[in-house]
Length: 251
Ligand code: ADP
Image (cartoon, rainbow, N blue to C red; front, side, top):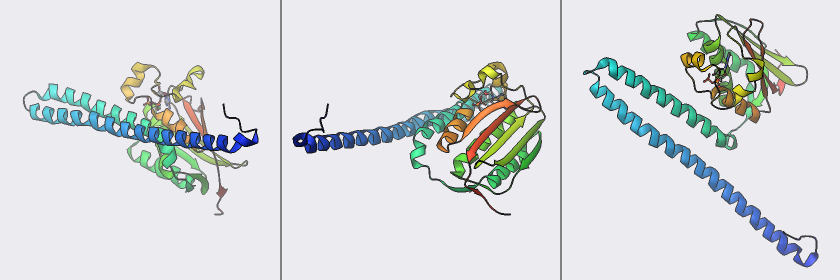
């Protein structure tokens, strides 16, 4: 216990406290550095044997193409899981390195819709208000949009509706609605936790590891944003995101 109330001991107590805080800061920095090193090491340790396995399978392919194809699928699946897990683990220390600037969210949303539409098998409709500016990181905000659009594509049936609208109170609201099975009310918070997947048989067919929404929640947290789930007008899920806005440019 440090006593900084009485004068004689005040300076030595403050100096001890400063040293203590400096030591803690150094320990924390080294821990974060170690975590980064750990993630990179794990990444390398896991990928190298998988690459070797893939090479060995390619050599065996002419002998038993069917069997090798099935095994190759397993390896590809494992690679995907490693990528997802590492990308989630990296997020833990990415916030420190993340820079923010003015981002035209309307353009970013439009860009991501156009990308999805290029490969989508759904009917996509949209109502995107132009020139909505937020303070954020374009790369990570794009990730949020990709994850939500990919889910609408994976779990939806025939149609997706995307709306972006500025609210009066310096906030923007984004809704991504689909016509899939929706999410039961009592599961709506759970799906934002890592590795949570509903109805595994259904989810299995669609692929994925239950990290997409955990990533969305983390990135939105960095941007003082929120995300929640409602029923969509088509009977599926409506993912609604709010973010603080900077300003609206004059058109
Ligand atoms: P993944 O899609 O890889 O499983 P997510 O974290 O993106 O991981 O989603 C978690 C779970 O939430 C999914 O497995 C699925 O059960 C459910 N889910 C997510 N988006 C939707 C949606 N649009 N409609 C219905 N269920 C969804």
